[in-house]
Image 1 (tube, one colour):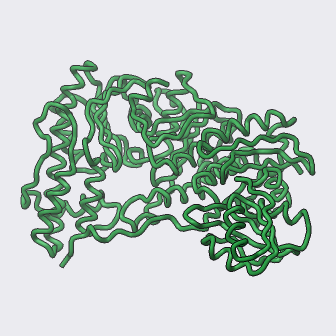
Image 2 (image 1 turned 135 degrees about the vertical axis):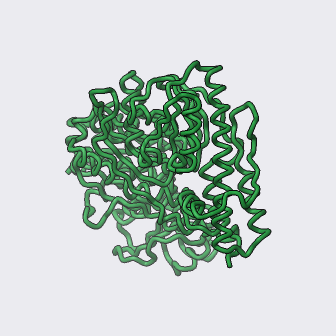
Image 3 (image 1 turned 180 degrees about the horizontal axis):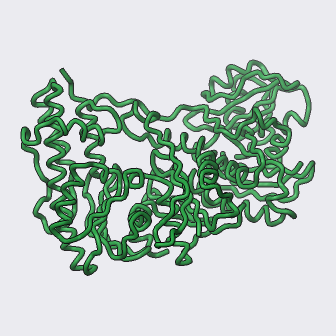
Length: 225
Length: 346
């Protein structure tokens, strides 16, 4: 199976083509903003290195968040449109699972956690046991609450929030090891998880984990009889 | 020649396929639209993040529907056009990225369309209006008088210095407790009201520069309403009628000055064209019909579904630009602000 992986949910703009276990082409730009301008030219460069081009794809995989609301919509919009134009299914992969995947693949019997810096003292956070059992499902949580809910460890953490969470855990006396503090998941893992995903359930829909900042307005209204 | 158009700059997700008819007008092969009115109703206005979230869920499906309804595939079209602004940036990015990706995979040229230019050129799709013409573009987000001299050749004669006309309607509706979207509701209420009961101001009327100002009028409605609160149904209808009558007077006077400015800067217009959601207001239309006949010009108002945001206008603007070889590359940026004069540079 040949999969195009796309990630713009966090601090990078990435794409790769994975054919079976071989990465055919790959490019990653570290990018805080400007994903909307950078992504399609980047995909064009990646696909130019893929014999057979878009017609040779079997599937598109895209990170669906949690992450930057605008960023994840860039990737999802591109992925869904590519799927439509190329006539192939599109699957969604969460950023948290893409951070966790290499930890799980490395084995060991520690707890594994993914922590993404969501700013203002908060994380997007997920924690799983060595066997893959969910300890804490994906959620938006304060650093302090994330540290508390984990228990005693020992644990390995990946993601842009790994250092923040690691500090908090060490203050609590927990054995916490930082595996990887990358700002974005490795794009090949996005494609690998996408290859394994079931298109019927891994939908390419945003996972925001936070509601929009908007409140209904009533204060302007003049009273009626 | 057939172009796919995608629109996501505000609260409508839309996609359309437009071709060229034998007489030079546009042939709308499909025009699919999904409005987000219910998503925003509780907030009394469009919430940008809610709009962006809604666009990304549906835009690919709208494109698929538009292609199917036109009975074409991406292979059969000549270009992909998407609105790249001005508008709510989160939504713009969704439609723009979708359009670029479709262009990349299909190998068809990409065109980043200015949403205002699309409104400005709609009358050529529907009525084959020749350049140059005077355009009143009036919606919830924009109020401008433009000399449309050619594709990419626009001179802004006047604009609002505060609220857009549609915005004034919507805010007045909100003040009076009318449901969202307020514009059509104010018009409905005004039908039963007395337009002379409240003496409201006509801001800028008589001034030579064809600019608009609506915020003082909106505030005057609020002051009157607060003075007589609590409001009866009669009060609300009379306030709406008085407000609408003031807007009709303002629009007629400002467009008259716009015509004068047009003749100084761009010669003789072939028509007076009105576009944008406000063009659906019958009272404003009647005022402009009178004015156009005084001036000896035809009044051209595209049908309401093509005056408000839609995909066909984006496809048509893309087609007009494609004919002139004006295509864009995949780095084209999404723009929250994009004055029409700047579209000329492309």
